[in-house]
Image (cartoon, rainbow, N blue to C red; front, top):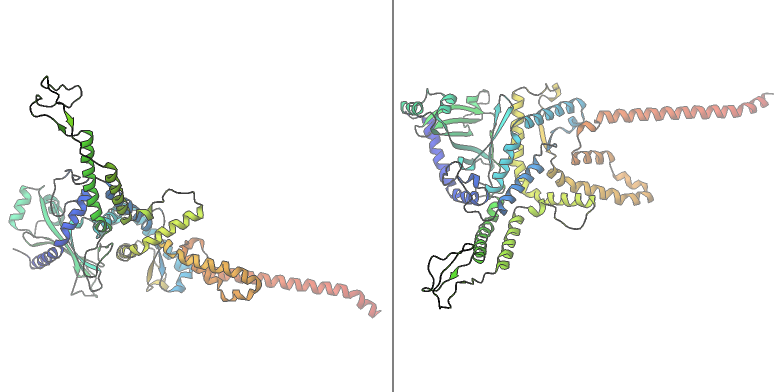
Length: 532
């Protein structure tokens, strides 16, 4: 007997399928030319089958891999910090006790990312983002590593947006062996037909659907999986039977889009922008290869009645012709212009590299530059990538960090916060190389201001009254992402200044006493003379 919930969800899945139909042929074409290992969208291939039949030039494949690796290094480089946590209340950021607790939370989160499978899964996510324009990652709690990340194939996922334009619904269609399904969900809710099928063919793949969507009747007074803000339902679509029903306290999927039109749900990628050049380059390469092959092994002109066939073109081959004739075997001149074809191919390659930001990512060869020039060029390149990466930060990094933080918090992995922080909100501050490069403009402007005010200050020191040097220091510390462990808190700074002021006051008093004693010593003979 079918389940009512499964029927409703299956109908919703059918609607999402219809909305995604036009994208599938586009994705299939992108995968064929740029990422053949994932070319299983509109057609299913045999596992391990060759998938590079359409590729005659690998420029797009290498460019996509380079861009994905660069995004990984610029946004989520695990060798350096790429995010920090800040209190929404600025006064708490200068509190030693509050900062120590927040630093401990950061360290636990970074160790969790490093211990999990985050690195390899997020790189796969960047690849999907570069090629398909939309990538899907599932984040779940794990008993061994606390958090587990899993990047899903775009061909499995069907998504929908909320009123703010953010993805809040994901239906994932996937397959798993019958025995694995039995071990995970049990067989109590299945039909007799499905039970017999699994018992008879335990290794046969069974299609399942995982639906995650916001609950309409969410009760905030009850904290259970069945009453969580987001429902999580596994069901079998053939028999329409619910296998498992639970929920998540926050959306468990992260679905960033590289670029997006306001009238579309799925994103668009740089591979879509370069697809025309990619297809043209492959066709031109195929033609050039055929032309070169004809030049190396050209067609032959053979008289129709003078030679004994077949013609032998192998080394030391003998071809017999009728004696007394002047007929010869001659190559056919096809008039190929290889330099023209190679120049046109290089134009297309340059266009593809530009579409994938290779000009901004790779430091080209040229005259030797100073270290300052190299730093300036690198910061400039990262700033050019900034606008394209802002959506990735909003739709990927922010929900990902929030999800991991909440999972660890519910698992009580963090130290107990001070009582003053029980209801304090925490914000995410990005300190990745790309984020620092975006903020470098502020540092440059501030440095130029101080350099220009220096000569003026020598003529009129009062000009520095306009500058709050404490504010300058705090702004530089925040902009440059300096770790809090090497910066004194506001209380420490105030205490240090009080100690310095007290020492200066003591020194002034000692100097006054010394001056008074010296004055009295000089006046003593005069007083003695007067008294005498």
